Length: 398
Image (cartoon, rainbow, N blue to C red; front, side, top):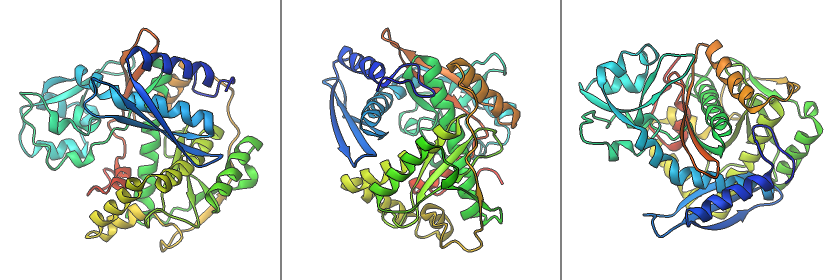
């Protein structure tokens, strides 16, 4: 609880004191439910007299980190869209669609079919790039139902590509932005992996990390996960063309309602990315065991995609039964030297830029107590990982 982990500015004790103080300041009540041990899934439910409905966040890892993570995620889910929408502005559709960064974006091309004149955007201003006017619906999945007067775009066909990827909370803007940017890189890499191996049936070998290559702290998490999930686990390197480690973890001997769920993690530190993936895998299984509606959601996704077997197999994501899959063993790379948080954020952005996939970030709000909400957008992010939500989507890039 006292040590400071990578990508955090405070210890868990200090961070929890911060978020607890913020929730008290906002007159918010919190209820916690924990599922599983020693790795767990903790659900934080927020409630207040001013909320239309209660909001949840889910934390992963060992007891203390799962509890603190759940509180921050619940705060993000409760407040991020409020400040995101406050920052949105209407822009002429042609001005948005003709930006070089959005020239080949599939959801924007779909929108163009209805000949809109204006749409809502979130504006990013970054010292290294031209300003970006990014379609709000790509981040705010409820935007089409709440669009302002003057937005005449028809989102019926394009809203399936909406997701909440790129919103994050943290202590201070830099910490929140690191998590937002890392999440975008993670979903891009996972989306590419699913597209390559389950949609296109690529012959590229799956890179399985040798358990013998794991440092002691990662190996402990790996073995704890296998023990509490009663299954062998595979850790897979799904790093994309962006030079930033991304891993997924999967159970070889269990699934949820027929879906071989994955945990995923991204970080400039391989060990941190790997442990995040393993902890998220445990989180997924524990919450499905403890909360009936979660397992029911997976069943609904399976049923919704049943008319399209090619998409359903992308949701199922069963590497063991997929024809033509080959695997090669790799080692977990050593971590680079620890960097200050602002240097970590710069490195993440620079590596995206070097890969031809520039990413923008924006501060949405910071309270007097220092709790920040940030937003990140990569126009060329592969969005195909949202097939796991049961959406009728196709890979946005070959």
